Amino acid sequence: MALKILQDLRQAAVTSKVFVQRDYTSGTICKFQTKFPAELESRMDKQQFEETIQTLNNLYAEAEKLGGRSYLEGCLACLTAYTIFLCMETHYEKVLKKIAKYIQEQNEKIYAPLGLLLTDPIERGLRVVEITIFEDRSIGSR
Amino acid sequence: MKNCEYQQIDPRALGTSNTRTSTTLPCGRKNSQRLRRKWEVFPGNNRFYCDGRVMMGRQCGVLPLTIGLIFITSGLFFTFDCPFLVDRLTVFIPVIGGVLFVFVIMTLLQTSFTDPGILPRALPDEAVDIERQIDNSGSASYRPPPRTKEILINDQVVKLKYCFTCKMFRPPRTSHCSMCDNCVERFDHHCPWVGNCVGKRNYRFFYAFIVSLSFLTSFIFGCVITHLTLRSQGVNGIIQAIQDSPASVAELVICFFSIWSILGLSGFHTYLVASNLTTNEDIKGSWSSKRGEESGNPYTYNNIFTNCCVVLCGPIPPSLIDRRGFLPPDDAPQTVTSDTELPPFMSKNDANMCTQGTKELLQSMALSTVIQSTCTPGTPKTAPVTQESLLRTVSITVSPPNRPPSTGCSGHQAQRPIDVSCSQKGNKRSAHHTHKPMLRVSSPPYSLSHSPLILSDGPDMGFIPLN
Image 1 (spheres, helix red, strand yellow):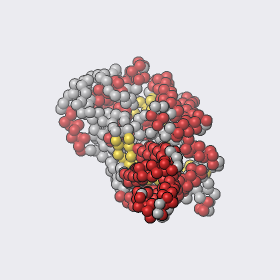
Image 2 (cartoon, rainbow over the protein chains, first blue to last red):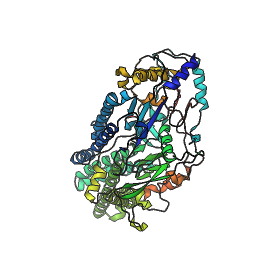
Image 3 (cartoon, one colour):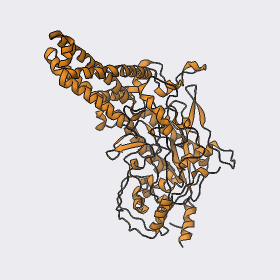
Image 4 (spheres, chains in turn blue, brown):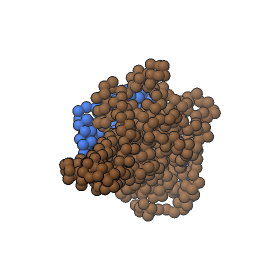
Protein backbone atom coordinates (compact mmCIF):
# COMPACT_ATOMS: atom_id res chain seq x y z
CA MET A 1 0.00 0.00 0.00
CA ALA A 2 2.72 2.38 0.96
CA LEU A 3 4.57 1.49 -2.18
CA LYS A 4 1.59 2.32 -4.36
CA ILE A 5 1.16 5.64 -2.65
CA LEU A 6 4.80 6.30 -3.21
CA GLN A 7 4.48 5.52 -6.88
CA ASP A 8 1.41 7.72 -7.25
CA LEU A 9 3.22 10.51 -5.57
CA ARG A 10 6.18 10.24 -7.77
CA GLN A 11 3.92 10.74 -10.71
CA ALA A 12 1.88 13.43 -9.14
CA ALA A 13 4.71 15.45 -7.80
CA VAL A 14 6.97 15.69 -10.77
CA THR A 15 8.07 19.22 -11.07
CA SER A 16 10.66 20.94 -13.10
CA LYS A 17 12.19 24.33 -12.83
CA VAL A 18 13.04 27.00 -15.26
CA PHE A 19 15.64 29.57 -14.37
CA VAL A 20 15.60 33.04 -15.85
CA GLN A 21 19.15 34.32 -15.60
CA ARG A 22 20.43 37.79 -15.06
CA ASP A 23 21.04 40.18 -17.89
CA TYR A 24 24.32 42.01 -17.39
CA THR A 25 24.39 44.01 -20.58
CA SER A 26 23.59 47.22 -18.74
CA GLY A 27 26.19 46.68 -16.09
CA THR A 28 25.83 45.36 -12.62
CA ILE A 29 22.27 46.53 -12.02
CA CYS A 30 19.72 43.89 -11.25
CA LYS A 31 17.97 42.97 -14.46
CA PHE A 32 16.64 39.67 -15.73
CA GLN A 33 16.55 38.35 -19.24
CA THR A 34 13.22 38.71 -20.94
CA LYS A 35 13.83 35.84 -23.32
CA PHE A 36 10.88 33.47 -23.17
CA PRO A 37 12.06 30.03 -21.99
CA ALA A 38 11.21 27.13 -24.25
CA GLU A 39 9.80 25.02 -21.45
CA LEU A 40 7.04 27.51 -20.82
CA GLU A 41 5.87 27.70 -24.40
CA SER A 42 3.09 25.24 -23.91
CA ARG A 43 2.06 26.63 -20.57
CA MET A 44 1.67 30.33 -20.86
CA ASP A 45 1.54 33.39 -22.99
CA LYS A 46 4.84 34.92 -24.03
CA GLN A 47 3.50 38.43 -23.72
CA GLN A 48 2.44 37.85 -20.15
CA PHE A 49 5.80 36.45 -19.19
CA GLU A 50 7.68 39.34 -20.72
CA GLU A 51 5.44 41.80 -18.99
CA THR A 52 6.09 40.18 -15.61
CA ILE A 53 9.84 40.18 -16.07
CA GLN A 54 9.85 43.71 -17.41
CA THR A 55 7.87 44.96 -14.41
CA LEU A 56 10.31 43.21 -12.10
CA ASN A 57 13.21 44.82 -13.92
CA ASN A 58 11.60 48.21 -13.57
CA LEU A 59 11.03 47.70 -9.87
CA TYR A 60 14.65 46.69 -9.30
CA ALA A 61 15.77 49.70 -11.31
CA GLU A 62 13.68 51.86 -9.04
CA ALA A 63 15.34 50.32 -6.00
CA GLU A 64 18.81 50.98 -7.33
CA LYS A 65 18.05 54.34 -8.86
CA LEU A 66 20.69 56.96 -8.30
CA GLY A 67 19.12 60.26 -7.69
CA GLY A 68 18.53 62.98 -5.18
CA ARG A 69 16.70 60.78 -2.78
CA SER A 70 19.29 58.02 -2.59
CA TYR A 71 22.13 60.51 -2.26
CA LEU A 72 20.30 62.28 0.52
CA GLU A 73 19.77 59.00 2.29
CA GLY A 74 23.44 58.15 1.85
CA CYS A 75 24.68 61.49 3.14
CA LEU A 76 22.34 61.44 6.10
CA ALA A 77 23.49 57.94 6.93
CA CYS A 78 27.12 58.98 6.72
CA LEU A 79 26.58 61.93 9.04
CA THR A 80 24.95 59.74 11.63
CA ALA A 81 27.78 57.22 11.26
CA TYR A 82 25.27 54.87 9.64
CA THR A 83 23.39 54.36 12.86
CA ILE A 84 20.27 55.62 11.18
CA PHE A 85 19.86 52.25 9.52
CA LEU A 86 19.05 50.78 12.88
CA CYS A 87 15.75 52.62 12.96
CA MET A 88 15.00 53.39 9.36
CA GLU A 89 14.29 51.11 6.47
CA THR A 90 16.26 51.89 3.35
CA HIS A 91 14.58 52.75 0.10
CA TYR A 92 15.88 49.51 -1.38
CA GLU A 93 14.20 47.46 1.32
CA LYS A 94 10.94 49.26 0.76
CA VAL A 95 11.04 48.44 -2.92
CA LEU A 96 11.89 44.82 -2.16
CA LYS A 97 8.70 44.59 -0.15
CA LYS A 98 6.83 46.00 -3.11
CA ILE A 99 8.41 43.37 -5.33
CA ALA A 100 7.46 40.57 -2.97
CA LYS A 101 3.88 41.78 -3.02
CA TYR A 102 3.88 42.02 -6.79
CA ILE A 103 5.17 38.49 -7.16
CA GLN A 104 2.59 37.15 -4.78
CA GLU A 105 -0.09 38.93 -6.73
CA GLN A 106 1.18 37.56 -10.02
CA ASN A 107 1.29 34.07 -8.61
CA GLU A 108 -2.26 34.32 -7.37
CA LYS A 109 -3.75 35.79 -10.48
CA ILE A 110 -1.78 34.37 -13.34
CA TYR A 111 0.74 31.69 -12.55
CA ALA A 112 -0.96 29.45 -10.06
CA PRO A 113 -3.93 28.75 -12.34
CA LEU A 114 -1.45 27.61 -14.96
CA GLY A 115 0.34 25.33 -12.52
CA LEU A 116 3.37 27.55 -12.25
CA LEU A 117 5.05 29.21 -9.32
CA LEU A 118 7.30 32.23 -9.38
CA THR A 119 9.93 32.42 -6.71
CA ASP A 120 11.04 35.82 -5.50
CA PRO A 121 14.59 36.34 -6.81
CA ILE A 122 15.73 37.66 -3.44
CA GLU A 123 15.36 34.13 -2.14
CA ARG A 124 17.87 33.03 -4.72
CA GLY A 125 20.34 35.78 -3.99
CA LEU A 126 19.07 37.84 -6.94
CA ARG A 127 20.71 35.33 -9.27
CA VAL A 128 17.69 33.92 -11.05
CA VAL A 129 13.94 34.10 -11.31
CA GLU A 130 12.93 30.55 -10.61
CA ILE A 131 9.72 29.27 -12.12
CA THR A 132 8.53 25.91 -10.86
CA ILE A 133 6.36 23.93 -13.22
CA PHE A 134 3.98 21.54 -11.58
CA GLU A 135 2.86 18.66 -13.67
CA ASP A 136 -0.04 17.10 -11.95
CA ARG A 137 -0.63 13.59 -12.95
CA SER A 138 -2.22 12.45 -9.74
CA ILE A 139 -4.97 9.98 -10.26
CA GLY A 140 -8.28 10.77 -8.65
CA SER A 141 -8.78 13.13 -5.81
CA ARG A 142 -6.23 14.01 -3.26
CA MET B 1 24.59 14.82 -19.53
CA LYS B 2 25.55 12.88 -16.54
CA ASN B 3 25.30 14.41 -13.15
CA CYS B 4 27.91 12.21 -11.70
CA GLU B 5 29.29 15.13 -9.74
CA TYR B 6 26.11 15.62 -7.87
CA GLN B 7 25.63 12.49 -5.95
CA GLN B 8 26.45 12.08 -2.41
CA ILE B 9 24.43 10.49 0.28
CA ASP B 10 25.22 11.47 3.76
CA PRO B 11 25.33 8.22 5.69
CA ARG B 12 24.66 10.03 8.91
CA ALA B 13 21.47 11.46 7.57
CA LEU B 14 20.41 8.13 6.18
CA GLY B 15 20.87 6.67 9.60
CA THR B 16 18.64 9.25 11.21
CA SER B 17 15.94 8.87 8.62
CA ASN B 18 15.88 5.14 9.23
CA THR B 19 15.34 5.59 12.91
CA ARG B 20 12.71 8.13 12.22
CA THR B 21 10.55 5.84 10.22
CA SER B 22 9.97 3.75 13.26
CA THR B 23 8.62 6.62 15.31
CA THR B 24 5.55 8.58 14.54
CA LEU B 25 5.64 12.06 15.79
CA PRO B 26 2.32 13.45 16.79
CA CYS B 27 1.08 16.35 14.83
CA GLY B 28 1.46 19.76 16.23
CA ARG B 29 4.12 18.90 18.71
CA LYS B 30 7.21 20.87 18.19
CA ASN B 31 10.34 18.86 18.43
CA SER B 32 12.39 19.44 21.51
CA GLN B 33 15.33 20.32 19.32
CA ARG B 34 15.33 24.03 18.72
CA LEU B 35 14.97 25.48 15.28
CA ARG B 36 18.24 26.41 13.73
CA ARG B 37 18.97 29.59 11.93
CA LYS B 38 20.62 29.72 8.57
CA TRP B 39 23.82 31.25 9.77
CA GLU B 40 24.56 28.05 11.61
CA VAL B 41 24.82 26.14 8.36
CA PHE B 42 26.41 28.86 6.29
CA PRO B 43 28.94 27.22 3.98
CA GLY B 44 31.46 30.03 3.90
CA ASN B 45 34.31 30.72 6.29
CA ASN B 46 32.61 33.28 8.43
CA ARG B 47 32.00 33.81 12.08
CA PHE B 48 28.65 34.86 13.41
CA TYR B 49 27.84 36.50 16.68
CA CYS B 50 24.74 37.72 18.46
CA ASP B 51 22.66 34.98 16.89
CA GLY B 52 23.54 35.96 13.35
CA ARG B 53 23.22 39.70 13.70
CA VAL B 54 26.93 40.28 13.45
CA MET B 55 29.29 38.59 11.04
CA MET B 56 32.91 38.73 10.10
CA GLY B 57 35.61 36.74 8.38
CA ARG B 58 36.88 33.49 9.82
CA GLN B 59 40.32 34.72 10.69
CA CYS B 60 39.76 37.94 12.51
CA GLY B 61 43.24 38.78 11.41
CA VAL B 62 44.76 41.65 13.22
CA LEU B 63 41.48 43.34 14.09
CA PRO B 64 42.23 43.16 17.83
CA LEU B 65 45.56 44.81 17.09
CA THR B 66 43.87 47.55 15.09
CA ILE B 67 41.36 48.24 17.82
CA GLY B 68 44.05 48.03 20.48
CA LEU B 69 46.31 50.48 18.72
CA ILE B 70 43.53 52.97 18.20
CA PHE B 71 42.36 52.73 21.81
CA ILE B 72 45.84 52.91 23.27
CA THR B 73 46.96 55.85 21.18
CA SER B 74 43.76 57.77 21.76
CA GLY B 75 43.75 56.89 25.44
CA LEU B 76 47.27 58.15 25.89
CA PHE B 77 46.39 61.27 23.95
CA PHE B 78 43.37 62.10 26.08
CA THR B 79 45.13 61.31 29.33
CA PHE B 80 48.49 62.91 28.86
CA ASP B 81 48.35 65.45 26.09
CA CYS B 82 44.91 66.91 26.33
CA PRO B 83 45.18 68.41 29.83
CA PHE B 84 48.25 70.35 28.82
CA LEU B 85 46.78 71.49 25.54
CA VAL B 86 43.46 72.46 27.07
CA ASP B 87 45.35 74.70 29.49
CA ARG B 88 47.51 76.24 26.86
CA LEU B 89 45.31 76.30 23.82
CA THR B 90 41.65 75.47 23.61
CA VAL B 91 39.09 73.04 24.93
CA PHE B 92 38.13 72.07 21.40
CA ILE B 93 41.13 69.85 21.05
CA PRO B 94 39.76 66.94 23.04
CA VAL B 95 36.32 67.58 21.57
CA ILE B 96 37.56 67.23 18.02
CA GLY B 97 39.69 64.30 19.05
CA GLY B 98 36.71 62.66 20.70
CA VAL B 99 34.46 63.09 17.69
CA LEU B 100 37.11 61.66 15.38
CA PHE B 101 37.77 58.76 17.73
CA VAL B 102 34.10 57.82 17.96
CA PHE B 103 33.69 58.06 14.20
CA VAL B 104 36.75 55.88 13.61
CA ILE B 105 35.59 53.18 15.98
CA MET B 106 32.08 53.13 14.64
CA THR B 107 33.12 52.88 11.02
CA LEU B 108 35.69 50.23 11.88
CA LEU B 109 33.09 48.10 13.61
CA GLN B 110 30.68 48.57 10.77
CA THR B 111 33.28 47.52 8.23
CA SER B 112 34.16 44.45 10.22
CA PHE B 113 30.71 43.33 11.13
CA THR B 114 28.74 44.01 7.99
CA ASP B 115 28.10 41.50 5.27
CA PRO B 116 30.35 42.74 2.45
CA GLY B 117 27.96 41.60 -0.25
CA ILE B 118 28.27 37.84 -0.12
CA LEU B 119 26.46 35.99 -2.85
CA PRO B 120 24.73 32.87 -1.64
CA ARG B 121 25.79 29.72 -3.39
CA ALA B 122 23.67 28.37 -6.17
CA LEU B 123 21.23 25.66 -5.27
CA PRO B 124 21.74 22.29 -6.94
CA ASP B 125 18.82 22.81 -9.31
CA GLU B 126 20.31 25.99 -10.60
CA ALA B 127 23.75 24.49 -10.92
CA VAL B 128 22.36 21.59 -12.89
CA ASP B 129 20.40 23.94 -15.10
CA ILE B 130 23.41 26.07 -15.86
CA GLU B 131 25.44 23.06 -16.80
CA ARG B 132 22.66 21.77 -18.97
CA GLN B 133 22.48 25.06 -20.79
CA ILE B 134 26.16 25.11 -21.42
CA ASP B 135 26.61 21.52 -22.31
CA ASN B 136 23.81 21.03 -24.81
CA SER B 137 25.74 18.64 -26.93
CA GLY B 138 24.40 15.79 -24.87
CA SER B 139 27.67 13.97 -24.77
CA ALA B 140 27.77 10.96 -22.56
CA SER B 141 30.94 11.87 -20.76
CA TYR B 142 30.70 14.53 -18.15
CA ARG B 143 32.63 17.66 -18.79
CA PRO B 144 32.92 20.55 -16.42
CA PRO B 145 31.25 23.69 -17.71
CA PRO B 146 33.51 26.10 -19.53
CA ARG B 147 35.04 28.54 -17.18
CA THR B 148 34.20 31.79 -18.86
CA LYS B 149 31.35 33.48 -20.56
CA GLU B 150 31.69 36.74 -22.42
CA ILE B 151 29.15 39.50 -22.34
CA LEU B 152 29.00 43.05 -23.52
CA ILE B 153 28.65 45.81 -21.00
CA ASN B 154 28.53 49.31 -22.42
CA ASP B 155 30.23 48.02 -25.56
CA GLN B 156 33.02 46.54 -23.55
CA VAL B 157 33.69 42.82 -23.57
CA VAL B 158 33.62 41.48 -20.04
CA LYS B 159 34.43 37.91 -19.12
CA LEU B 160 32.30 36.24 -16.52
CA LYS B 161 34.04 33.42 -14.75
CA TYR B 162 32.38 30.30 -13.48
CA CYS B 163 32.92 29.77 -9.78
CA PHE B 164 33.35 26.10 -9.02
CA THR B 165 32.74 26.54 -5.34
CA CYS B 166 29.58 28.56 -5.61
CA LYS B 167 28.42 26.82 -8.77
CA MET B 168 27.47 29.89 -10.71
CA PHE B 169 28.79 32.36 -13.17
CA ARG B 170 30.01 35.26 -11.14
CA PRO B 171 28.32 38.56 -11.90
CA PRO B 172 30.63 41.30 -13.16
CA ARG B 173 32.96 42.74 -10.54
CA THR B 174 32.37 39.79 -8.28
CA SER B 175 35.27 37.77 -7.00
CA HIS B 176 35.68 34.75 -4.81
CA CYS B 177 37.56 35.37 -1.59
CA SER B 178 39.72 32.40 -0.69
CA MET B 179 39.93 33.36 2.95
CA CYS B 180 36.21 33.63 3.48
CA ASP B 181 35.31 31.09 0.81
CA ASN B 182 32.55 33.28 -0.56
CA CYS B 183 31.83 35.14 -3.73
CA VAL B 184 31.60 38.81 -2.86
CA GLU B 185 29.97 41.42 -5.04
CA ARG B 186 32.09 44.31 -6.16
CA PHE B 187 34.97 42.65 -4.38
CA ASP B 188 37.64 45.10 -3.37
CA HIS B 189 40.01 43.12 -1.18
CA HIS B 190 40.15 41.09 1.98
CA CYS B 191 41.45 43.32 4.72
CA PRO B 192 43.15 41.55 7.64
CA TRP B 193 43.18 44.79 9.62
CA VAL B 194 39.41 44.76 9.80
CA GLY B 195 39.11 40.99 9.65
CA ASN B 196 36.58 40.97 6.82
CA CYS B 197 36.25 41.32 3.07
CA VAL B 198 35.59 44.76 1.67
CA GLY B 199 32.90 44.62 -0.95
CA LYS B 200 29.83 46.35 -2.25
CA ARG B 201 27.98 46.72 1.02
CA ASN B 202 30.75 47.85 3.30
CA TYR B 203 33.11 49.71 1.01
CA ARG B 204 31.79 53.09 2.10
CA PHE B 205 32.30 52.18 5.75
CA PHE B 206 35.83 51.09 4.97
CA TYR B 207 36.53 54.31 3.11
CA ALA B 208 35.05 56.40 5.92
CA PHE B 209 37.19 54.41 8.35
CA ILE B 210 40.50 55.00 6.62
CA VAL B 211 39.78 58.65 5.91
CA SER B 212 38.72 59.38 9.46
CA LEU B 213 41.63 57.36 10.76
CA SER B 214 44.04 59.45 8.70
CA PHE B 215 42.46 62.57 10.15
CA LEU B 216 42.72 61.13 13.64
CA THR B 217 46.33 60.08 13.32
CA SER B 218 47.32 63.38 11.75
CA PHE B 219 45.42 65.25 14.44
CA ILE B 220 47.05 63.32 17.26
CA PHE B 221 50.43 63.62 15.61
CA GLY B 222 50.04 67.36 15.25
CA CYS B 223 48.80 67.79 18.78
CA VAL B 224 51.64 65.75 20.24
CA ILE B 225 54.22 67.75 18.31
CA THR B 226 52.59 70.96 19.53
CA HIS B 227 52.54 69.63 23.06
CA LEU B 228 56.22 68.72 23.08
CA THR B 229 57.19 71.96 21.41
CA LEU B 230 55.29 74.06 23.92
CA ARG B 231 56.65 72.04 26.79
CA SER B 232 60.22 72.29 25.60
CA GLN B 233 59.89 76.04 25.24
CA GLY B 234 58.83 76.45 28.83
CA VAL B 235 61.43 74.38 30.63
CA ASN B 236 64.86 72.96 29.93
CA GLY B 237 64.55 71.90 26.38
CA ILE B 238 63.27 68.89 24.59
CA ILE B 239 64.85 66.21 26.75
CA GLN B 240 63.09 67.45 29.84
CA ALA B 241 59.87 67.71 27.93
CA ILE B 242 60.17 64.10 26.86
CA GLN B 243 60.92 62.99 30.38
CA ASP B 244 57.90 64.85 31.66
CA SER B 245 55.62 63.24 29.15
CA PRO B 246 56.94 59.88 27.93
CA ALA B 247 53.53 58.80 26.68
CA SER B 248 53.72 61.44 24.01
CA VAL B 249 56.77 59.77 22.57
CA ALA B 250 54.95 56.47 22.32
CA GLU B 251 52.10 58.22 20.52
CA LEU B 252 54.56 59.93 18.23
CA VAL B 253 56.13 56.67 17.23
CA ILE B 254 52.81 54.93 16.59
CA CYS B 255 51.40 57.83 14.64
CA PHE B 256 54.53 58.33 12.64
CA PHE B 257 54.57 54.79 11.37
CA SER B 258 50.83 54.62 10.77
CA ILE B 259 50.51 57.91 9.00
CA TRP B 260 52.46 56.87 5.95
CA SER B 261 50.45 53.77 5.30
CA ILE B 262 47.08 55.20 6.29
CA LEU B 263 47.47 58.37 4.29
CA GLY B 264 48.77 56.39 1.36
CA LEU B 265 45.84 54.03 1.56
CA SER B 266 43.35 56.87 1.81
CA GLY B 267 44.86 58.52 -1.21
CA PHE B 268 44.80 55.30 -3.17
CA HIS B 269 41.18 54.60 -2.31
CA THR B 270 40.19 58.17 -3.10
CA TYR B 271 41.60 57.57 -6.56
CA LEU B 272 39.65 54.30 -6.81
CA VAL B 273 36.43 55.95 -5.72
CA ALA B 274 36.86 58.77 -8.18
CA SER B 275 37.36 56.37 -11.05
CA ASN B 276 34.82 53.78 -9.83
CA LEU B 277 37.39 51.00 -9.68
CA THR B 278 38.03 48.29 -7.17
CA THR B 279 41.41 47.37 -5.73
CA ASN B 280 41.02 44.00 -7.39
CA GLU B 281 40.50 45.52 -10.84
CA ASP B 282 43.26 48.03 -10.37
CA ILE B 283 45.79 45.43 -9.32
CA LYS B 284 44.90 43.05 -12.10
CA GLY B 285 44.90 45.90 -14.56
CA SER B 286 41.55 44.82 -15.92
CA TRP B 287 40.86 48.10 -17.63
CA SER B 288 44.28 49.50 -18.11
CA SER B 289 45.32 50.65 -21.51
CA LYS B 290 48.65 48.93 -21.15
CA ARG B 291 47.09 45.76 -22.43
CA GLY B 292 47.25 47.12 -25.87
CA GLU B 293 43.56 46.74 -26.51
CA GLU B 294 40.90 49.33 -26.47
CA SER B 295 39.63 48.95 -22.99
CA GLY B 296 38.28 51.30 -20.45
CA ASN B 297 36.33 50.85 -17.31
CA PRO B 298 32.76 50.18 -18.42
CA TYR B 299 31.36 51.04 -15.01
CA THR B 300 32.65 54.58 -14.73
CA TYR B 301 30.37 57.54 -15.25
CA ASN B 302 33.30 59.54 -16.59
CA ASN B 303 32.71 62.20 -13.98
CA ILE B 304 34.60 62.27 -10.70
CA PHE B 305 31.73 63.74 -8.75
CA THR B 306 29.22 61.23 -10.09
CA ASN B 307 31.56 58.34 -9.40
CA CYS B 308 32.07 59.49 -5.84
CA CYS B 309 28.36 59.91 -5.27
CA VAL B 310 27.59 56.53 -6.71
CA VAL B 311 30.21 54.65 -4.76
CA LEU B 312 29.81 56.41 -1.44
CA CYS B 313 26.24 57.60 -1.37
CA GLY B 314 24.47 55.13 -3.59
CA PRO B 315 21.82 52.78 -2.21
CA ILE B 316 23.05 49.91 -0.07
CA PRO B 317 21.46 46.67 -1.20
CA PRO B 318 20.29 44.43 1.61
CA SER B 319 22.20 41.34 2.60
CA LEU B 320 21.46 38.47 0.24
CA ILE B 321 22.24 35.82 2.78
CA ASP B 322 19.41 35.49 5.21
CA ARG B 323 21.43 34.92 8.33
CA ARG B 324 18.65 35.00 10.83
CA GLY B 325 16.06 33.08 8.87
CA PHE B 326 15.08 29.69 10.18
CA LEU B 327 15.95 26.42 8.61
CA PRO B 328 13.25 23.84 8.30
CA PRO B 329 13.40 21.86 11.51
CA ASP B 330 15.74 18.89 11.50
CA ASP B 331 13.50 16.10 12.49
CA ALA B 332 10.34 17.87 13.34
CA PRO B 333 7.57 16.57 11.17
CA GLN B 334 7.47 18.27 7.84
CA THR B 335 3.74 18.31 8.20
CA VAL B 336 4.22 20.74 11.00
CA THR B 337 5.27 23.25 8.47
CA SER B 338 3.02 22.29 5.63
CA ASP B 339 0.05 24.54 5.98
CA THR B 340 1.70 27.52 7.45
CA GLU B 341 4.51 27.41 5.03
CA LEU B 342 2.60 26.91 1.87
CA PRO B 343 2.56 30.10 -0.09
CA PRO B 344 -0.57 31.96 0.89
CA PHE B 345 -2.18 31.70 -2.49
CA MET B 346 -2.12 27.96 -2.28
CA SER B 347 -4.52 27.79 0.59
CA LYS B 348 -6.80 30.36 -0.93
CA ASN B 349 -6.97 29.01 -4.38
CA ASP B 350 -9.50 26.24 -4.48
CA ALA B 351 -8.93 25.67 -8.14
CA ASN B 352 -5.49 24.49 -7.27
CA MET B 353 -6.50 21.79 -4.88
CA CYS B 354 -4.61 19.25 -6.89
CA THR B 355 -1.37 21.09 -6.49
CA GLN B 356 -2.00 21.69 -2.85
CA GLY B 357 -2.75 18.10 -2.29
CA THR B 358 0.39 17.14 -4.10
CA LYS B 359 2.46 19.34 -1.90
CA GLU B 360 0.91 18.13 1.26
CA LEU B 361 1.36 14.57 0.24
CA LEU B 362 4.96 15.28 -0.65
CA GLN B 363 5.58 16.78 2.69
CA SER B 364 3.95 14.00 4.58
CA MET B 365 5.85 11.41 2.60
CA ALA B 366 8.98 13.23 3.44
CA LEU B 367 8.60 12.20 6.99
CA SER B 368 8.10 8.54 6.72
CA THR B 369 6.55 5.96 4.55
CA VAL B 370 3.34 6.33 6.50
CA ILE B 371 1.15 9.16 5.44
CA GLN B 372 0.19 11.49 8.18
CA SER B 373 -2.57 13.98 8.23
CA THR B 374 -1.52 17.53 8.04
CA CYS B 375 -1.77 19.90 10.89
CA THR B 376 -1.39 23.56 11.40
CA PRO B 377 0.69 24.52 14.34
CA GLY B 378 2.50 27.77 14.35
CA THR B 379 5.96 27.77 13.04
CA PRO B 380 8.23 30.56 12.10
CA LYS B 381 7.85 32.16 8.74
CA THR B 382 9.68 30.56 5.94
CA ALA B 383 7.16 30.43 3.20
CA PRO B 384 8.74 28.82 0.18
CA VAL B 385 11.54 27.19 2.08
CA THR B 386 9.79 23.94 2.61
CA GLN B 387 8.96 23.39 -1.00
CA GLU B 388 12.54 23.99 -1.88
CA SER B 389 13.85 21.66 0.68
CA LEU B 390 11.52 19.03 -0.52
CA LEU B 391 12.24 19.48 -4.14
CA ARG B 392 15.92 19.32 -3.83
CA THR B 393 17.56 16.04 -4.40
CA VAL B 394 21.22 16.31 -4.61
CA SER B 395 24.24 17.30 -2.77
CA ILE B 396 27.51 18.37 -4.07
CA THR B 397 30.67 16.53 -3.47
CA VAL B 398 33.20 18.11 -1.27
CA SER B 399 35.90 18.59 -3.79
CA PRO B 400 35.10 18.04 -7.40
CA PRO B 401 37.91 16.09 -8.96
CA ASN B 402 38.28 18.50 -11.79
CA ARG B 403 38.56 21.56 -9.68
CA PRO B 404 40.80 24.08 -11.33
CA PRO B 405 43.81 25.55 -9.60
CA SER B 406 43.01 27.98 -6.90
CA THR B 407 43.44 31.01 -9.09
CA GLY B 408 40.25 30.08 -10.82
CA CYS B 409 38.10 30.72 -7.86
CA SER B 410 40.16 32.67 -5.49
CA GLY B 411 42.21 34.71 -7.81
CA HIS B 412 41.38 37.97 -6.31
CA GLN B 413 44.58 38.78 -4.63
CA ALA B 414 47.60 40.23 -6.24
CA GLN B 415 50.09 37.92 -7.70
CA ARG B 416 52.62 40.64 -7.92
CA PRO B 417 53.91 42.62 -4.98
CA ILE B 418 51.93 45.68 -4.17
CA ASP B 419 52.32 48.44 -1.73
CA VAL B 420 48.94 48.16 -0.18
CA SER B 421 49.07 46.97 3.37
CA CYS B 422 45.71 45.32 3.35
CA SER B 423 46.28 42.64 0.78
CA GLN B 424 49.57 41.25 1.96
CA LYS B 425 48.24 38.48 4.08
CA GLY B 426 45.78 37.31 1.51
CA ASN B 427 48.56 36.09 -0.74
CA LYS B 428 49.94 33.75 1.84
CA ARG B 429 46.60 32.49 2.92
CA SER B 430 45.23 31.58 -0.47
CA ALA B 431 47.31 28.45 -0.47
CA HIS B 432 45.45 27.20 2.54
CA HIS B 433 42.06 27.45 0.96
CA THR B 434 40.01 24.45 1.87
CA HIS B 435 36.74 23.29 0.50
CA LYS B 436 33.70 22.84 2.54
CA PRO B 437 30.79 20.59 1.86
CA MET B 438 28.03 22.68 0.51
CA LEU B 439 25.00 20.59 1.09
CA ARG B 440 24.14 17.28 2.50
CA VAL B 441 21.20 15.21 1.55
CA SER B 442 19.51 12.63 3.58
CA SER B 443 17.83 10.33 1.17
CA PRO B 444 18.75 8.66 -2.04
CA PRO B 445 18.11 10.78 -5.06
CA TYR B 446 15.16 9.58 -7.03
CA SER B 447 15.71 11.32 -10.22
CA LEU B 448 18.26 13.74 -11.35
CA SER B 449 18.58 16.05 -14.29
CA HIS B 450 16.00 18.74 -14.38
CA SER B 451 13.22 16.95 -12.61
CA PRO B 452 14.42 16.63 -9.09
CA LEU B 453 12.10 14.90 -6.75
CA ILE B 454 13.04 14.40 -3.23
CA LEU B 455 11.50 12.93 -0.22
CA SER B 456 13.77 14.03 2.44
CA ASP B 457 13.77 15.39 5.88
CA GLY B 458 17.44 15.88 6.12
CA PRO B 459 19.15 17.68 8.89
CA ASP B 460 20.79 20.14 6.61
CA MET B 461 18.71 21.37 3.82
CA GLY B 462 21.54 23.46 2.69
CA PHE B 463 21.77 27.08 2.54
CA ILE B 464 18.61 28.78 1.52
CA PRO B 465 18.70 32.49 0.99
CA LEU B 466 15.56 34.21 2.09
CA ASN B 467 14.69 37.80 2.45
